[in-house]
Length: 312
Image 1 (cartoon, rainbow, N blue to C red):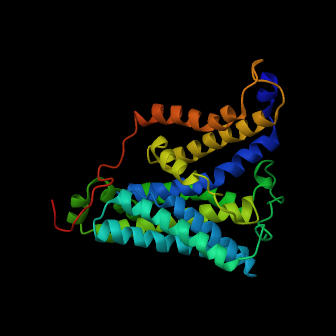
Image 2: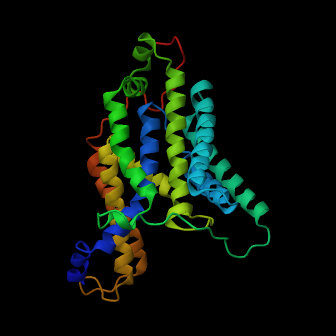
Image 3: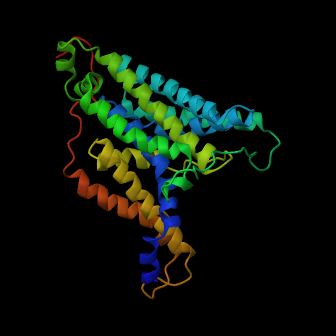
C-alpha cells in the first residue's frame, strides 16, 4: 500500500486530478484575498460560488457561449459583492452577519431558480463543458480546461497588481491603515467596494468552473464547503497570492490522495480503515498546516474594522 501511494506522486493522472481539484480553490482564494487585503471579510463566498455555478451553467444551457457563461457568473458574483460592500462599507454593518446572509440568500435564490426552471426534471440537465487543452505540450496542463490556465495566470497578475502598481498600494493601504490612505486622498469606501466586487467576481468564476469545466451539470451541494476552505487558505497563505496557489494545490493533493486511497483495496500499513478516515484526511492535514502557518501570518491591520470617512 505504501509503495502504491508513493507511486502516485510520479503519476501524471494523479497530478491532473490535483490541478483540477485545485482550480476552484485558486480562484476562490484569490477572491477572498482581494477582499481581505482591502480590510473586508467576505463570508458570502459559499453562496457566491453557488450562484456563479448556477447562472454560468444556465446561461450555457440556454444556448449561449461557454465564455459568456463565465462572464455572467463573474457579473453575478460582482453584484453580490457590491451588495456586501454596501452593507459592510457604506452602512458599516457586521461583516460576519452580512457575509453569512449573502451565502444564505444566494444559495436559496439559486435553489429556487433551479426548481422553477426545471420543475419536472429528475436528473440535472447537462451541457457541453470546456474541452481539455490537448494542444499544449505540457503533460499535466494539456489535460486541463482553459479556466485552469486562467486561474494559474491570475496568480502572478494579482501579485503584480498588489505589489507593483498604485492601485495595489491603495488596496493594501485601506486594508492596513485607512486613515493614512484617506490622508493621501484615497477614497477608502470606493477602493474597498471595488476590491470586494472584483474578489466576488472571481468567486463567481470559481463556482462556474464546477459546472462548466469540472462537471457538465448543476446540482445542489456541489460547492460542498469549498468556499470555507478558501477562507482558511488565505490565512495559510499569509494574504499573498503565491502562497495561496501553494495552499490550494496542497489541499487538492490531500483530497486527490484520499480519493485514491479509498479506491485501493489494500489496507494502509496493514490496517483496514473506515472510509470516513480518508474523507477526513485532507481537512485534518490542512488544519495542521493552517495552524503551523497561521502562527507567523501577518494579517491586514484594518481587517473587519469598519471605517467612516473623517474618523481617526
